[in-house]
Length: 193
Image 1 (cartoon, rainbow, N blue to C red):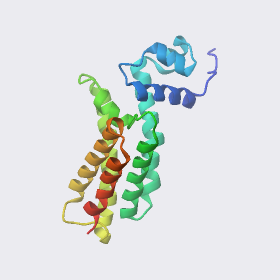
Image 2: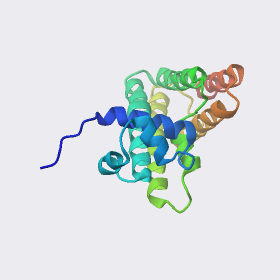
Image 3: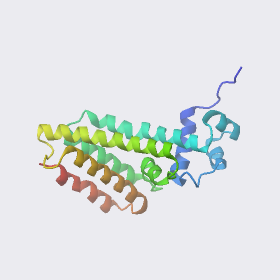
Image 4: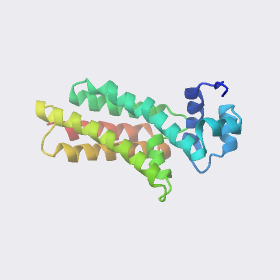
């Protein structure tokens, strides 16, 4: 009979996520993961598989508790307000992060080895989910006249996805309040009819 787990999975994923997020996949060793989670190597392998599997589960955990929660909070807001709240939250998180880690999803997009098709696909699917979320909000705003309709909702959603990615990369290397606030402030002019 298997012994029950003596740890909380979310707690372990939080610890692994923080380490991967701060150091990246390659720079994080199994020894680092053992240290930050407090589990033995055998327990980590039995519960999560190898380092790559733990990375993937940590990334999924991040997306679920961060991006998907943020999108859910914004879905029921009026369209222009939903985009403003979404990007204001990203801006706040970027400026309040003393380690300047950026976004784990964007970091993963840059960190994924070119030959890891499965992980690249997972990152791409999450980016598509964000794009679809932005598209739905923009289309609703164009329909009710609160978001300009001179560009297609598809093109505007893709532009905002690019702004999001750029904002999160800049938050790592140039976490300057004026710079990041300026990027988010310019969205108002881009969206307003």
